[in-house]
Amino acid sequence: MFKPLSLSVGLRYTAAKRRNHFISFISLTSMIGLMLGVAVLIIVLSVMNGFDHELKHRILGMVPHAVIQGQSTVDDWERIDKIATEDRSVIAAAPFIQGQGMVTGAGNVHGVMINGILPEQEKTVSIIEDNMVEGKLDDLQSGEFGIIIGRMLAANLRVKLGDKVTLVLPEASITPAGVLPRLKRFTVKGIFSVGAELDGSYTLIHMDDAAKLMRTNGKAQGVRLLVDDLFKAPAVAERVARSLGGRFYVSDWTRTHGNLFQAIRMEKTMIGLLLMFIVAVAAFNIVSTLVMVVTDKTGDIAILRTMGATPGRIMRIFMIQGAVIGIFGVLIGTTLGVLGAEYISAIISWLEGVLGHKFLSADVYFISYLPSQLQWDDVFIISGAGMAMSLLATLYPAWRASRVDPAEALRYE
Image 1 (cartoon, rainbow, N blue to C red):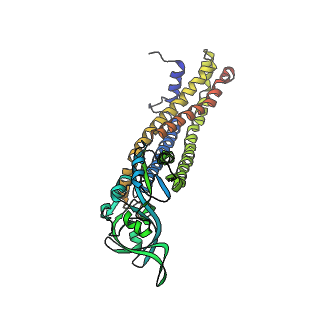
Image 2 (image 1 turned 30 degrees about the horizontal axis):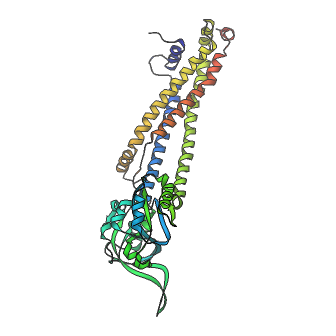
Image 3 (image 1 turned 135 degrees about the vertical axis):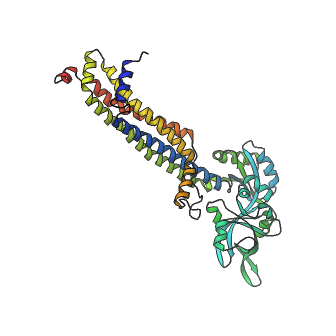
């Protein structure tokens, strides 16, 4: 079978045939370095994608994607709900009343965000029902003054299901006894756990009870929206507000939690760049490999030149050798990285079982396992960058080989 001279000699130099058919040690070390760099970069970025996904799912599954509010309250939230859900980008909508206050229980006090909701509507826009540890969302009944709190808040207040807590609002009431804060006793009807900081500051009560407590005359403060694309939430909220007419205020998650996710995105970018330097160092080890080969094969290069090989052909021989090292290193590294990203959670769980040590404690971190989400865009970018750097690394040694003077090289042969 015909094989071009450049390809044949380049492959022969890569797989130096001595007693065995393994590739030379120096080529092997360059390939292993590139392989490990690519694999580690894919795994680390997949883990960061996993944390990002978990954070978005848990926090943005609880807080509104977008909110439409009136100047103080909305007179007809059903109309807003109906018009909002007619928008193609809105999955569901639910009314709410929101305020801040303090919860006291068993002699402990903690600041909280109070959310008045309708349980049957809240299920459509929140993941709260899927994360109930005790009780259920439907246990919130109008007039019973029940409250659902997070597991962290329950631990801080030292209360459990069925215990009484007191909700204190930062508003004063004038009574014959003087100016007193507005407060009301509630019964703990449920405890949830989403694993984020919301477990320690998020509370839910029935919207009718919230309307009485906050004196909204039975009206909702606004309507929260669940949209199909998080990054379109600002535009969707604006579009729905325009279709409603009148004066409405809109807000979305980018204003309330945008800084958190921007920080995560920046951290992922910076770590990706730092790890890409590792891949670059491994790729440019090919330079030292090829320089050593060129030095060792100077006599062979001179003979090829005297037999009519052009500088361009000599250059292609060593570019092929470096490309083979780079391509095999990147392909093996990509394969290991993809497999590692897919099974890293199971591997860490197995290690925890073997060592008897929990790497991610639920008491410290918002999740108790190592998440991983493989994104093929990242894989293609990393693989492409690794191959490009490998090819660039071959240029100087190949050019140096093409500049070998046959007469000078063969003088002492």
